[in-house]
Length: 70
View 1 (cartoon, rainbow, N blue to C red):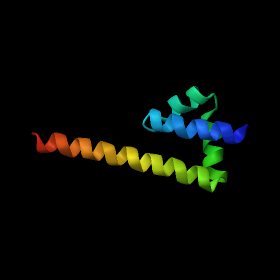
View 2: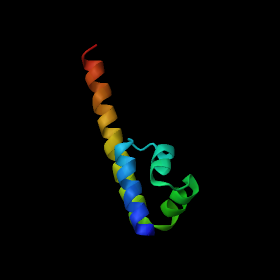
View 3: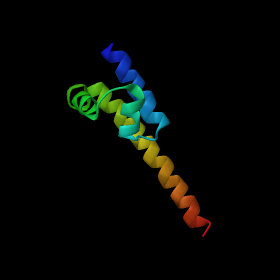
View 4: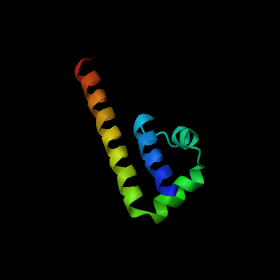
């Protein structure tokens, strides 16, 4: 069950652009649970960090495009 929730959380983080509160509500877990997983599960933490890095890259690219277009 826990692994299923972790998988659902990683999918939710992708869909919500890493909005933790919204992702937790969608999956039905608390922020405390998410943080506990981040602190105790290295693979979960790695996957979440990868998702955050991708979201940040997308945001930076959009910002740079807007800057270039004035």
